[in-house]
Image (cartoon, rainbow, N blue to C red; front, side, top):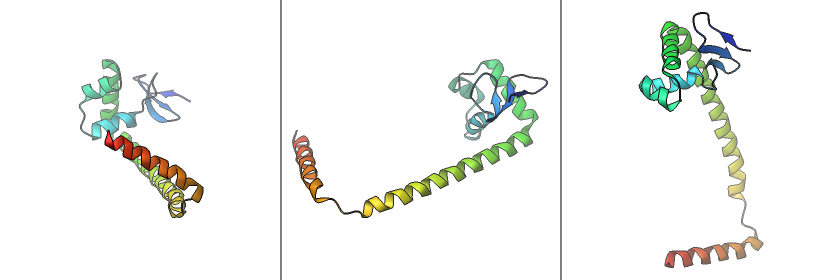
Amino acid sequence: MTEAYPSQTTVVRTSRGLSIAGTRITLYDVMDYLTAGWPPTLIQHWLNLTEQQMADVMAYITRHQDAVEQEYQCVVQQAQEIQQYWEAKNRERSVPSANVPPQPDHEALRAKLRAWKARLEQV
């Protein structure tokens, strides 16, 4: 589903949200860089956009600033929630393996590794 806005065809709404037509770049990507203080010309070069695309994006953001900012904040919040979820999952997964005692048959392998490390440190 792609919906173009009347006066311009550069900014379209896709399943990913507001995007730059013909690319996989969202306005939220551009907003990330703007929020970080990047100048538009640097963003344009970094994202490999044409001058017209960047001008249209900046004009769209300026014209619809409140709506874009509100949508951007929702996207940032969702990203933070997803990151927190996976960090918690990874912590849960790493705890059991840290508490498992080493297996006796692996001690020979560990001794070989220590010997190799010692040899490499001598070189």
